Length: 132
Image 1: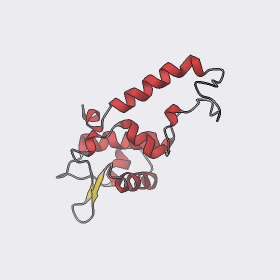
Image 2: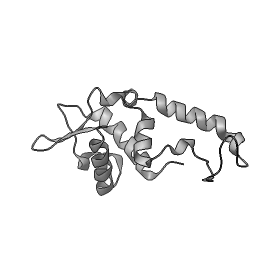
Image 3: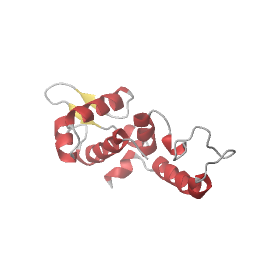
Image 4: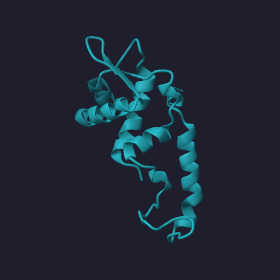
């Protein structure tokens, strides 16, 4: 249901939240090795997240990636939407363009409650929650 970019981003952020701080920044190489995510792919994901201020980075000798207190307030749903380019959790699971509440596909009504609940859970999980 989710793209690899979303899964990898969340997986890497779980590691970043647990292991990095403004005083102890992590390099992409470290995160990639620890999470078994291809380094080049993770580098692109982190560039995208940093450009949208979902994570912070500094260059130089003590550079690397970390999260600020404000960034820890972002939800997992925010990250998923950024990675996916849209809110795929509101789309038809069969990828039908004309499926919605007024024109449901064959399984729409069977899963709409679960999809809605999953979306709400992702919305209510902040990056700070990933530390717990």
